[in-house]
Length: 457
Image 1 (cartoon, one colour):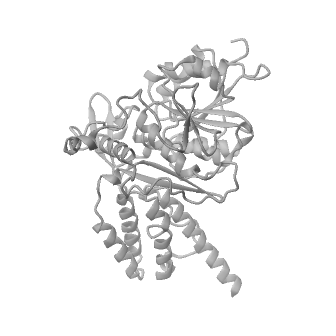
Image 2 (image 1 turned 30 degrees about the vertical axis):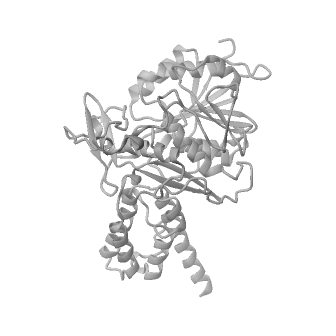
């Protein structure tokens, strides 16, 4: 009897763990796996188990300090209610009370930004990103489509790689974790880090000599900086995995204490607020693979001058005023994380970059994910890869690049390969990671290329 009870408890804990990890990763409700084994009948989900699910998700301390979007929390609890009603289960009062409380909470502009928490073995990673709620597609003309967490067939790749994590970044993080020997004691540079999930994972799982995050848009860099602080403040990526949430950045539901931070967050949220009406119905299959968040919003006019003022005068005026970062006096746009100088942040534009900067960085490994989506940027991207890969580092060795892409459009992918060949770069397709660490859709192929510059080229 004891053994049987222990087995049942283990199964329940396993189910609870899977639901919890999916909830904090904000897996779309339609794709959530509610149980991993048929050994427990749905009708055996007791009120105690229901309360346990609530305590592990919407009532958990992580949900208060690093909340998923309010819209997602509502959809999650609503889905639980529907499932329990469908099987005629005995529903506990806490389910109804929690759903009612969520409905009464005011959904303000703050909900355009939220946290995703990824739980690895003894490690938690947190990344702030925008809610995939309002999306702009670009083809011959612009349309706006609203995504519903419960019914939408769209996936996160339908949103631009500016404020949203895409599947290839998660895929590359998994590959790097499995192949950490390639990064051991290496200088790593990531092109187009976006919100930083790949780099944050790699820094927590691998033993590098240094890791340089890079991007060009100042608002993306700002969120990237905050995500790095959230995950590494008071911790180093070589420390034992005893990670505790940092208080360096408050929950998005709270007002930023720093005035400049507050202005920047309002600016980002304003740009993510899309109020335009769609002029035509949009079918995902019709849309091109070039997608972006709309930066025009009628709501922005309601802000006063102080709130609408951006923290930076223009795109080239990126600077950090934080005790957590130290500016490199020799490399403009480069900052070292004060608590671990192996972690670096660089403002880097592929089209206007200074080649001398590449010589100073001289990485052994280049990583990139979700950067092959627009043919117009490929010449600049491949030119940077060519320069980095042709540098002789030590003992005549050259760097190696690993580029992960979701193959949404074969023509775009083939064009990238042609541009690589025209620059004299060679590539090979690597095997996918064997073990899944994250929950993401992979029905669309994800490909990792190992790119090198042959000796003598």
